[in-house]
Amino acid sequence: MTKAVFVDTNILIFWLFELDNISYKQVNNLIECVNKKGEKPKILEKTVTELNMIISDAFLMTSKILINNLRVDWDSLTISERKKLLDEIERDYDKKYDDAYNKLNVELKNFIPRGGVRVLVSKKLFKAIYKEIINKTYKEIQEYLNPKELNNLLTAIQVFRIRPFFEIIELSKTFLSNISVDEITIIYEGIFKAMRNVKKNS
Image 1 (tube, one colour):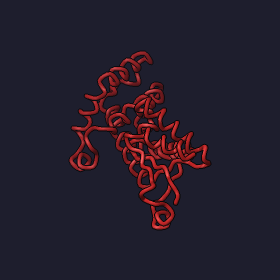
Image 2 (cartoon, rainbow, N blue to C red):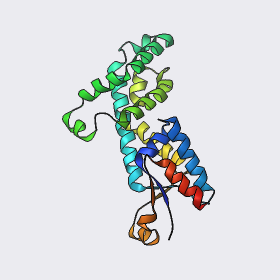
Image 3 (tube, rainbow, N blue to C red):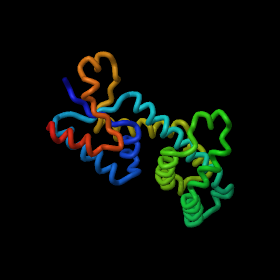
Image 4 (cartoon, one colour):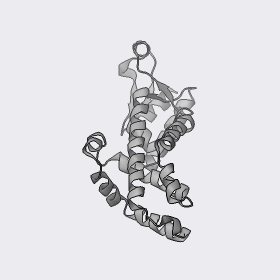
């Protein structure tokens, strides 16, 4: 039987966006341990789909927060004034997020959970976008916050951040015939346990 190490959506998100330093280091150690065996930790296609949904939701909320809070006279502001405005948004981000969520239509509210990891990812996206928009005009910012930019982000994450470190697989009947379900290690909060198992079998 083959033993496989799987990483679930929550752990992948925390590692990808470095939402927690301890978890980030633990996953890096896990990747290193599995690599020593000439393998990669595995993630399911379903996990990638869930990851893309979370990032898409967070990107939408980040976009709405920016559009809701940027001043109409943005183009006439100095760089210092723009920075001050963006810093104010960041300091009060949880409230800004909640305000933006309350303005969503019912259909989107049914689709996007109110809080949780999406808020954390949205904060990370805001910090990244902050650097990109500080020198842009208001119109350029609106054009920047579009589905094309989101697709570019999702593609970049998969090409540069996921595929080099993880093997993406479809949990098919063929796969299950070669791997015992009892021997599949799924990484949850107890990531240390999974790491010990990998080291023991390396």
